[in-house]
Length: 417
Image (cartoon, rainbow, N blue to C red):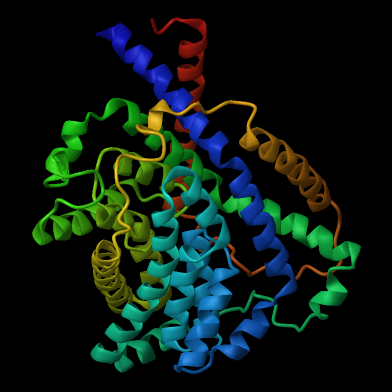
């Protein structure tokens, strides 16, 4: 039994590293694009465009979110800054949802671990989430809560760099701008490395140690349904949609870190709705609730949680039955059978893309060490909290590194049997 555990430990560690190797170039590419846009498109210009509650303001908020960071905690900080500066409540929520669901790098990572239907579901679902949240807010009319939230958040220092900067065509030709891009790229990784480390490690552990019977118990009907496609009743789909956020609540990892775990759910036959609900749940976990309470007060924080949860349920149900209507629900258990059956390390396109983006990352890291005169990056996607959430994630990441180091040693030395 001990030998079996050690062998599984080694396999879980190897699976985690394999997962990350598969996704490395997508992370790097997405964060390079995100860094370019964030340096060239200033937050001040975003604020000026989001002052109302109409379709134009919500649409612009979605676009600004799309070109923003995928880090959940960073999105909270920027949303707070925009709302404090006069952005409407609905556009602020739209920005928050878009910056965690419509971002470029997330689509790349989903494409690697899941099927094309999930990529479509992510972007279509992101728009549906915004529409559902908008409709819920219009129906519930929380004007008093919004006024209280603005009063709660008013005052304090503005640290988001309000000054106008030169046009992007001028900036992109400046060496100083590329230093800023390098710094932004380093900051992007600095914001997500803990979530990614913990998320990928949990995914490796779950993929190897958790038997299919666990998913059959947790997600009702999984054992008898045809993969992620047809075969579920409405009540079973609804249960999957509710259980997905519960799993996300227990792991509380960010939108990028939970994709390999979503792939594990997919490979074990969880419904399309259940997997999408899990992916969309990064904003309905307790750390996010607590941070929003710190910004806006507990009443508004709970209202935002309810808004996001209702929107999530409506969106995933619409996606599931919409895809079923058009006959495009994903079938089977993933691209290549079980998620752990894949060959992670080969001389294929992933190897060469990873090599290219590692070189680009090295160049940007070198640029980030150079002194810059205009520190305009501060306040854009900074981490909103340095308290217990970050502390817990840090030590979980450290424990993950220790787990991976021992596991790889067991696998490659044969000590695990």
